[in-house]
Structure formats: structure tokens, C-alpha cells
Length: 258
Image (cartoon, rainbow, N blue to C red; front, side, top):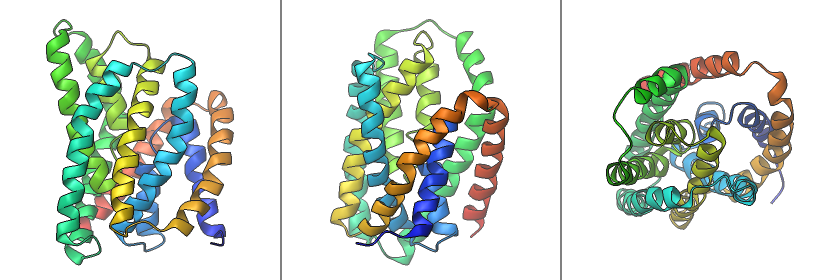
């Protein structure tokens, strides 16, 4: 399977942004494949899910070795996300992954998820301040909310490949404000691995994964993430995050209007 230079460049560009901002590649990769390359939305989602499973596996290993993963929270998230992902994939298979109806459904969910991501990027600090002035932690309640959060993320990720990045991190920051940010990020990445792997394999079994495109994207993204991570301390994070939120909002509106 020959590598495609355009997909390599796309992978590198997305990898750099992910390294700089930490925002999940699905927020950028899937809409780029759909809008710039004309890839069928379901194929774009399926390919991006296996792409995410591969890249986030390496990140989760690093965070686990540094003791930055709350495994109990990962288990609770997975308890909600994995069954919902499997159920969603069964429904998608029944409806016909490559049908026009599924293309419309995926495009609408993807557009909505991108708008939600952009809003969270802009208002994350305000939401965290609101959570800080809220009720005291409660182990049982927070556990149930974590499972419910996992279920929502499982649905969004299976349909659109978006949700395990900015949405997941923001939800965990609000549920577990006592955790340091690096532990929240490590936990979110560790949870994303089984979720994106299960969802990606489901799309692959349904024939919704382009393996040649996947290899080209990975060839560009791996060095891109390394470069972005290296440049991150030298770039103003808030300005970049707001610019990214603006791009995601425009893309989300365009997808919803298409």
C-alpha cells in the first residue's frame, strides 16, 4: 500500500496542532478528510478511530509509566463508553455504513460535536470556576456521573470520532477538580485507547476503514506530534486555543449546513 503525500502532510499538520494544544485529532482529522478530500463521512470516522487508537496508545504508555493515570476513573468511563460504542456500531451496521442516510447522520453529529468542542475550549476556565464553587465531592455520585460521561463520549466517538479529547478532558476536570491537569489528561488518553480501538475495529469489520490512508496519516502525524510537543512551551497556549476554537466553530457550522 503506497503512502500518499497529501495524507502524510495532513497527518503532520494535525499532529503538530495536537502536540501544541492537546486537543484530540478527531476534531481536526475527520472534518479535514470530509471537507478537503471528499472522503465519505463514515470512512473518515472509521479510519480516524484506528488512527487515534494507534497514536494514543503510545501516549497512554508514557502517562502510565509516569503514574499519571487514574485507573479507577478509566474503568468507570469504559463501563459507560464501550457498551454504548458496541451498541452504536450494531445500529450503524444495520442502517448501512456507506448509505446516504448514514453520511447525513454522521455529518450532523460531527458538526454538533465540533461546535460543543469549540464552546468548551472557550469557556473551559469559567466552567471550572463554576464547578469549584459547587457541591462537595461525593464518591458514589461522581462515579455514576463518570459512567454517564463515558456513555455520552462512547456515542459521540463511535458516530463522529470526536469527543474523547476536549470534551472528555473538560468533563473530567469538572468531576475531579482535585486531580492535577496532567493526571486528567493521562486518564483521558488511557480511556480513549480501548474506546477508539473497539469503535475503530467495529468500523473496520463494517468496511469503513481505508488502511492505505491510515498508514499515510500515521507516517505524518508521529513526527508532527513530536514537533508540536517540542514547540508547545514556546507558543502562547490561550491564543492558540481560541484560534482553534474559532476554526472548529466555522467547520462545525459548515458541516451542519451541508
